[in-house]
Each structure stands twice: as C-alpha cells, then as structure tokens.
Length: 336
Length: 283
Image (cartoon, rainbow over all chains, first blue to last red; front, side, top):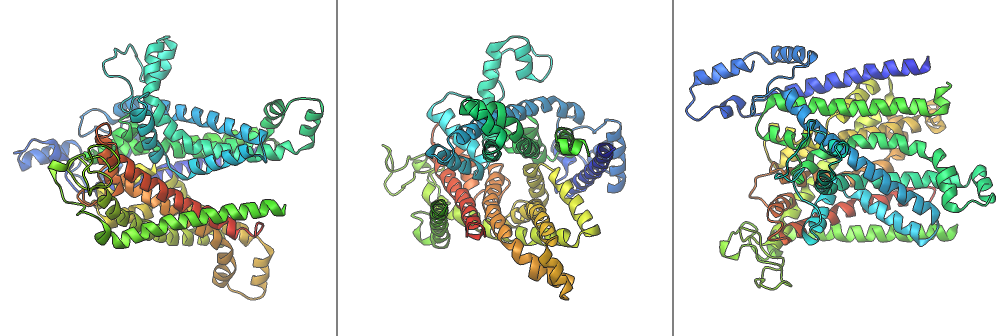
C-alpha cells in the first residue's frame, strides 16, 4: 500500500514538473528576438510572403492560443515542424536520441568501472599512500567539470598521441548497414566489429570526459561505505575464515555497501545526460545536444521546444526509476 | 588520532594557501592587465599569425605565449580574459548565493506552502538541461556580460536552495531552535539569529564552488559564441578559437585551458579547505 501511494504521489509531482517545463520553455522562446520566418525566406521576400508563412506555422496567433494548439498537438505526439529542416520535430529528435543515449550509457559504464576500481583499490589499501593518492585523484576529478576534461583529453589523445578521433560519431566514408540509429548496439548484433571499433574510437573521449566527474563521486562514496562495512562483525568473521582481502571486499562487503552509491548514481546520471549538450558540441558528435545548440542558433522554435521537453522527460524518468528502485531494493521501505 | 587530525589540518592549510595564491595572482592580473599586458589584446597582425611560445623554435621575441591565427598576443588576451572570468565569478556567484540561500532558508524553515512552491520550482528547474537552458537564455537576452550573469543566477539558484533547504530543515528540528522559540524569539528572529549562523559554513562552501562553476559557464557560453561580443578576450572565446586550429597551434588552446583548470581547482579547493576549517568535529 505504502509503495502504491508513493508511486502515485511521484507520478503526480512528475506531471506537475513536466507541465512546468512545457510552460516555461514555450514562453521563454517566444521572447527570443529575431524573426525565424524572415530567416527562412530568401532575401527580397515580401511582407505578404512572411505573413503567409507565419500563418502556416501558426505564429500569427496570440501566444496563449499558440500554446494551446501546441499542447494539443503534443498530447497526440505531434511536436510540430522544424523551421530550418521542415521535417517533423518528433522524427528529428528521435533520430538523434539513440546517439545521445549510447554516449550517456557508455559514459555511465565507464564511470562505474573507474569509480568501482578506485573504491575497491582504496579500500584494500586504506590508511596507506595508495588511499591518499586515490583521494587526491578523486578530488581533482570531482572539482573539474566535464567540459574541461573533454578539452584535456582532446589535447592528450587527439593531438599529442593521436589515438582517438576528435570529432564526429563515425568515420563518414564508412558504409553503414544499420537500420536503427543505435549504431554501437547494432554493430555488435551484426558482428561488425570493424564498425564497432570505429564507433568506440569516436565515442571514447566524449564518454570519458562525461564519466570522470561521476567516477570520482562513485569512487568516493563507495569507498566510504565499503570502509564502514569492512569494520562490521560479519566481515571480520569472513576474514577469520581465511578469505583474502579482495575476496572479502568483493563477495561480502560490496553487496551491503552499494545501496547508497546506487541512489546517488541515479541522480548524478541526469547531470551526466545534461552534460552531453556541451560535450557533443565540443566533439562534433551528432547527438541531441549538438542539434539543440544549432536549433538555438537558428531560432528553430519548434525544434528547441521538442528537445527541451525530451530532455525533461528523460531526467524525470531517470529520477522516477531511481526512486522506485530504491523503494524496491531497500528492505526497510519494502516492508513498511 | 591527534596525528591524523594534524595531518588533515596541514593538508587543508596547504590547499587553502595554494588556492589563495592563485586567486590572488588572478586578482592582480585583473587589476593590472592594462599595464602588465605586453600588447594590445585586440591588436591583429596577420604577419605574426600562429607564432609559437618562446621556448619553441620559430617564436617571435616579445610574444611569450605565442599568437593566435590573427596574430593577437595570447598572454595579453589571457590577462584581459581574467577580468571577465573574475567579474562573473564574484558577481554571478554572489547574487546566485544570495537568492538561492534565501529561498532555501525560507522553504526549509517556514515549511508549509512556501516550501511546497519552492520545492516544486526546484523540481521543474532540475528537469532542464542546464547548459541548454543557459544558451537559450543568452539567445533571449542577447549576448553581454549582464546576460551571462543573469543566466547563471536564473539557472544555478537551485544549487543553493536545495542544500540550504535540507540543512535548515535539519537545524529547525533541533532542540536549540525550540528553546529559542520558547524563550520568545519570533519566527524571523529565529531564522536569522539561530538557523542562519549554523547554515552559514555550508553556504560559504557552496559559494566558492559556485564561483568556479560561473567561470566555467562563461567559458562554455563563449565557446558556443554566445558570450559577450566576440572581440573582447575571454578564456572561453580563446578556447573556441584554439579548438579550430588545434593541430596547427596548440598553444592557443592550452594556455587558456590551464588558466581555467587552475581557477576552477582553486575555487573548489578553497571551498574544501574552508569546509575542513569550519567542521566542528575536526576543529
């Protein structure tokens, strides 16, 4: 019963949040100076042309009724038509979404691996120089944001030791047999490891840049809870049975120490997804964020709206899943 | 135990000194830029384009850190760019702190409908991708220093509001607050005289972090060419330019990157150091 009530309450607040986002983004971008219609037409277009096209995009109506029309469309899955490309916003956005999702998930996996290894190594060597070194590295990784890490990586692995590609998602000259836009996933399924390697060589640096700050958070928090768990009686018991330190950490302590980190990772994951906007721009990676910045520069109002709403839906969905997962995983809440 | 404590103190002390040193140098650069910069940061000389820094063969005397593709002096641009960075850090950081902390304090202490409204607003704000939101705001407001500051304040107030709200709530539940109320302090008095001093250390740490973030946001906006006018030297603008000539002239990218890196690190280490100083358990 308790869980059902929590779920309903969360769904309600989520709806309010999304409605708030929709209202704010709609009205904020109507204040953008510069007439998007005038930018679409070739020079020499008459006022009548502008008026006709404005009417076509519904831009001649009062703002409130524009909002009503747009909202009614959104409810039916119609996000309008992009002004610059004249394609449906939903198609454009869904076409780019897989690239951003693959990048985010890749970054998350990297962060979990790096952070996990750092935490376990730090716990093994607690009180020694190893732990001190890991703490310093964590501190650095945490205070410098993804944008700067991206630039540093670009200089090191793109210019100094040119191992990885510094721009794009895939080498343009390659022929792609893909039917979906989940290139990385599909290349694995089709056993095209040559394409997979090319995709990873493009994705490695942007993903790592996004992963570094999150890895530091995971490393720090997981190490802290591992160290606390290592002092518990049952861990001492496991140790007296003769198991080695690494075995004790991996098989006994980890399971109990991981819950606080897990919930934090959920919230931080939304920050990571938000970071893709500038990281995609930096590495010219053809995802949603890069398209969003172009949309702002081109004053493509319907497209901006669609992208912001999609980001908001992703963020709130991740938060919702984390909350529910926490309720299910945490035994104290489950039996309440 | 005592040993560990003095270790932490020493490390915190070192961190504080190093970050204060860098930020002090930055402040000096900001104030003295017109006098110590060897060249006019805007002066172009196409015959001197992409000159490497002094230790690399082929460098031009007098241009210590080299020149960019338009022949502008990197060192002079760096010094002048520090002005924008520092102004944004102080002004945007300060205003964000003031507004965010006030709202957080009100929500956490007054609870009720005030808390409900502010918490819903925080939820809505957290659902926006911050970088995209700031780019959108600059597009609305038009690129200028004021717009950048407004964008940072509008987007980042939640960083303060969330943390201060939780902290104020925790403090509000403590006995000393109840006894202050029993002793006849009003609600506002309790909030300002009892809760605020106890939340202040957290606010100060958040403020130093926010200053670092503000510098980065300015750099990001310059990077997408939406900061102040493209002529004025900013670190982000220099990075944006350096990104395009990364293979021909790495120094155009490297020096502003180092400056940004150290500045962000200094602000956050200042915060960490202050946190250790404030922490009553360690003290």
